[in-house]
Image: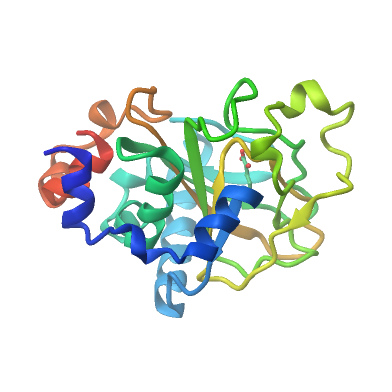
Length: 252
Ligand SMILES: O=C(O)CCC(=O)C(=O)O
């Protein structure tokens, strides 16, 4: 099945995003989608997040990456049906289709909780070089499992940097410093913020006394490598549970 057909089967169509939403995503390089998850889904995802951190202990996150001061999880596609929403939600997939074109796949599904007093990252892009505006390879979405506030380590983005053709490593002396144009993505839990991964972004310092929980559902053009090799890492049990359309999105 081709990707376009899988998207149609998952009820994805381009009119799921308004003209203004598409324009905002194109111009600013990110787009908040409110109320993608309800309270019960947020609670259940956080509970599963904590269970996995406990179960996996020191190995947590190692399929992709560990980061000091955070609890990271990886390969979540294989760690519970509850995560299926993150790679099948029609509005999120419509945004991916808009940024990446008709042929894309999941790159990875990871979790990141910035712990109190930690979480500061340098501004970065999830791609090694600057790209021509409009010629995008990767697009991320952050699933808010906590309210994101100015205090608790919400993600920051530099609006429009996706169209700058520049990469932060070449353009910034100190990527950890506040950027004069940055926006802190504050929003209630249940929101998903899609951000073009070429948009400069970073986690900020969590100054609260609670972890700040998020999931990253990250997509790539189909001709690019996946951050998590889904074919190798997915159990037969997970593959058997998934619809054919979902398997096309994962490319398994
Ligand atoms: O979790 C966040 O706020 C952003 C994290 C991020 O950009 C990363 O880990 O590369």
